[in-house]
Amino acid sequence: MLPADRYDAKELHDALKGSGTSEDVLIEILASRSNAEIQRIVELYKEDFDSKLEDDILGDTSGYFERVLVSLLQGNRDEGGADSNQATQDAKDLFEAGENAWGTDEEKFIIILCSRSIPHLQKVFDEYKRLTDKDLEDSIQSECSGSLQTSLVAIVKCVKNTPAYFAEKLYNSMKGAGTDEKTLIRIVVSRSEKDMMNIKDHFLETYEETLQSTIISPDESEALVQLFKLT
Image (cartoon, rainbow, N blue to C red; front, side, top):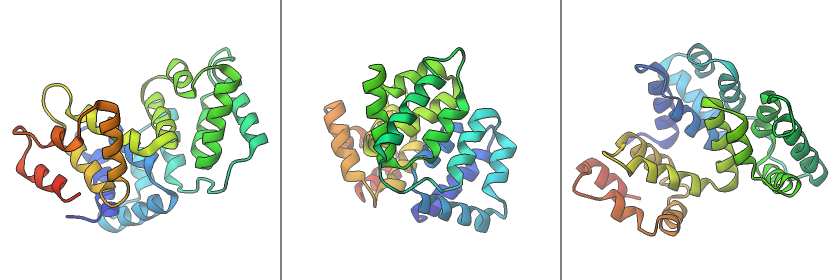
């Protein structure tokens, strides 16, 4: 099995170079990884595929969605704490850029959500709720659309609670007809040494069944069953 960071690089390459661009994979990986992890993925992508990840993203995406991905790809999100005054201002700016604007200032959403530190953004979300009586996630869903909406919502969910984000991803990959084994394997590989126990806890709390009982069924491949048992 490939190490998680090298597996991420491979998944990004497959998402960009397969038949059509798998935008969901790009969003999931870049929205949930730390600065150090993203920087390492960029190095491994170049090493393994003799191509720059940023160039490949620029060649396969466009518009504000491309802007989000390239911003995240820099791996330079602030790593400091929360500034209460700035958090209040950021919350006001997001309101003015969306709910209180004629049209949406997408660039403002991208700048704040892709550059501010995790603790700071958590404070911004609280301030936004206090100021508007709405969750920022709901505002994004009403103000944005398509891949931009999906990417910004993913960032918000990861900032709020990364294990809960992946629990939801796992659940969605297994509900309905058939199982999205590629997503299951990607999440298990990437989170097995980080927060898989927390993901399992959130899965049980949210869906009232264990992840193991859901994932290990007669319909799953033996390889997937064995992989999950290693976590």
